[in-house]
Image 1: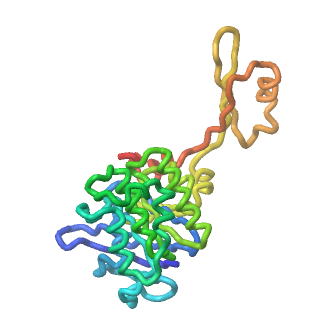
Image 2: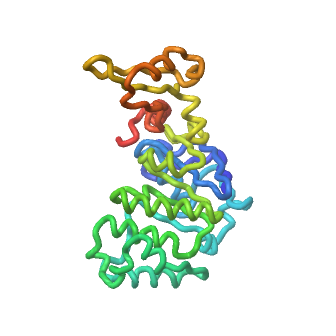
Image 3: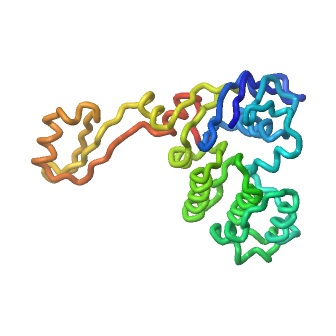
Length: 284
């Protein structure tokens, strides 16, 4: 879907480059996570790829054609959900959606989307009366209203309660299962772990690591099993390496002879990998 080669960008008032020679591909039908600490250039990269910033160095190919060749018809194919929702606050939710629908040839069933996201009953309310979470959900409807083939999402679940975040993530999965492609930026590594087929970590304006979440966990960590068991009047814990578990007699003796309270696999998390690769905590 996208081929990005030697992408560099410097804001006019900045002395240093924000993006410094980035290279990555996004495959059709995948959710691709672009991750990194705040200020590293994730949002700038998305703005370049949706043609809001055009004076970049390097090359970007969308569907095997230079992105610079595309005119306004490009926006008929893409949907964008920025981190900070932008709506006409004096209009109702329904009026907002209907206004933006007029810009597109292809129009989605936005009533169904609003019903799924729990804001259909409030569609006649002015957006100024919406809570932050409702605005975020309306923002997703707006990103999807033209049935895009390519979806750009920046922190799509930030500010949502767990129930509504689950609904939105399910919609993103369904979109991917229907053949859609997603570029996702977020600091929530649980979302990344659940949604992304591949991820790219950014540091100092460059891509420093790209792979599937599963492969990154194998590369950067060791898997183990931690058992909590009763010993006398106390709880004891013991860890065993996953790789040699099938030949570990101590593990089997413990399971057979002791009262087991819990048994958990302990794997390296994407949060751990984020810190190792970028040097910054993911929630910073």
